[in-house]
Length: 565
Image 1: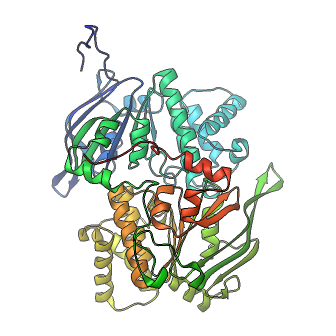
Image 2 (image 1 turned 30 degrees about the horizontal axis):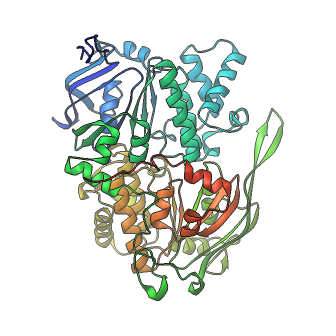
Image 3 (image 1 turned 135 degrees about the horizontal axis):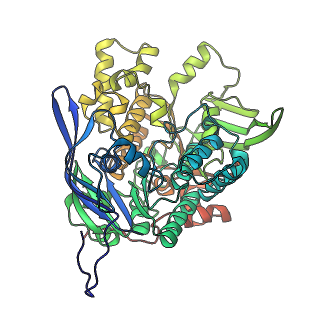
């Protein structure tokens, strides 16, 4: 809204002005309202963070702004103005002319938004061409490499030849960020832009966004569950709960002195490096579960033994030749019964590749993996089937790992059907029990993945991983897409299950604050190698490697005190 500032000069007009916006989704003959008259202003050069639990309406509000509501979603009332121009009701062609050039978008899901049959380079070049950023093959390619480098992707020229399935989750996210930034838009809507990124690359990307804001006046709207990021990077914070805005204002003021009960709960649930381990694992001294107790590692029995693990991929070079890419280089570690070992490191450091080899989804180039003392490389048929019963995954990408044609109930029930656990009635009961455990409403059992938010899909993936009551869980960024409240619930659940059932976890994450909460020991990976391996207290209290210290220093909001007043 226009007006006068405190010096009597005209106040700047907002780039984006949302007023009394209501959004509903049509079901049968009724429209279920999911946004209840929300509003905000975004000014040139301003950074705004929108936080709230999964399903609170964060993404829905900003997707409504650029007319990208999914399925039957529609704006039922309210106004969206871009530089004074009303966007509600404009022609599709007019909106398409704004997207990319003036309003950029970094979507939440890297896998669904990257075409698996096109190379990364081709897709970035397409964005460069579509936005008229360069002409001629060489110029387009040079600009594509430039934006990939700006998004923090190493060896960008080599990576141009690779395909999405050859990228880690974080690398895919960086490719999407490069596409969103390609046209230097006036406003960038970044929907969980760093949830798949390690902290060092996160800092590179966020520093680049800050540079854009400072030099070109680009405004940024972060949709995020990372309160540290919101406190450090955004001037203004908007807190959403159940389709309404419950609190807004200066970020640090709200996070240090929250007023609304929901905001207080968010702040209280946020993990930090000062946090201590949740409870304790079943194998801690005397079987106790005291908070912060030191694990009695010497008394544990190894259940996962990895020795000299190596994985080499052959990448196509030109029309004929190939070149080797070493994803994992001689990794060695053990996980004892009832213990949680975390693999941390930059995106592309080899963490997920190790997980795939432990799960027998990838074959090692060299090295050995033993589960309960048995070498897994020669398993097949019944032996591999039995291994899958005791060793279950929770994958990083809930969009790609959930079948869009199966409803949620059948998705969670699938492992029970495959392994013929119980009868139909007991399986249905187990599904409802699992939905309760991961804090999802039971009525979602009949819904489909496209009807759920990213965080809700990730909770479904966790529930499916728990369905068979496995002995070992391999959790690949299992809580990275969750808001802090649900993340806290899932971490508490994992800790409780570990204590009760003696579960063993291989926990892969880039979130070091979460590692502090969940892990007994930490393996730090860099460029395919484990460069540091110690107890969690040792790694966080006195890291031995400069690289580990860089990871700790790069955590957003580390120096900012969050607290409930």
